[in-house]
Image 1 (cartoon, rainbow, N blue to C red):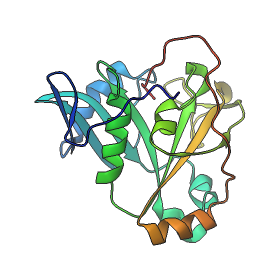
Image 2: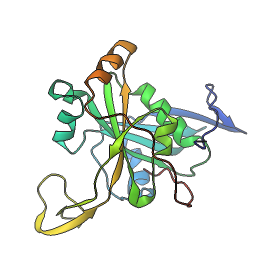
Image 3: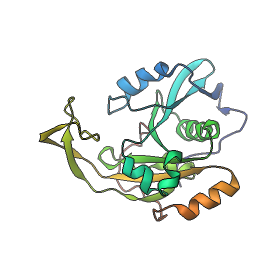
Image 4: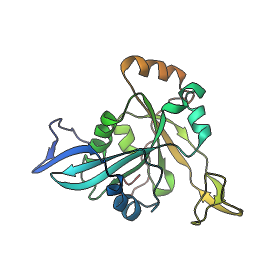
Amino acid sequence: ANGVGKIQTNGLLSGKMKYKVELLENKKLADPFILEIHYAKRKPSISFAYGLYDIDELIGVCTFGSPASPSLCKGIAGEHNKSKVIELNRLVLKYNRKNEASYLVGQSLKLLPKPKIVVSYADTAQDHIGIVYQATNFYFTGTSKARTDMAGKDGKHSRHHLGDRTKRVFRSAKHRYVYINANKTDKKQLLKELNYPIMEYPKWTITKSLTYSL
């Protein structure tokens, strides 16, 4: 139903392709994916970057960084948990073949330091509903409202209150997903402290091809 098939733990997904996910010590390796392939064409704050390799070819990246909104970090599970909050802010694939997105996200979460509260968004303006997050067991916690922000120097929205107050840029509604990346005990406690309601997954209703450039 979610469009994602079974994933073999030995790294083989299909045919002669052998996949592996590794920490990118050189984060600049992710730049071509983020700046050239991803629709936003903008580099976010990156604390951890993981690469999906098919043999020796880098074919995808998944990056995590500090959320731009301090209020989100405090609000998601309280002031005392704000340092645990991190955003999965870019997921980009060169070919986007079957299972690649969910495999990359799943393996990246295993490599990410624990405990972490991972938040990510699916942009409704790009017709994304978060299929890959649903396939990797994120919790759906609601959809933000569309609004306008101050324009930054690049003409896009500014989240840091340093933009041009005379110009406004539309920000589309986004589906918010949360993943508790922790051991069993910590996960149970963090779920109790989660301030967002866990809701049913949104369903795909628009007839368009799926993309996982999130």
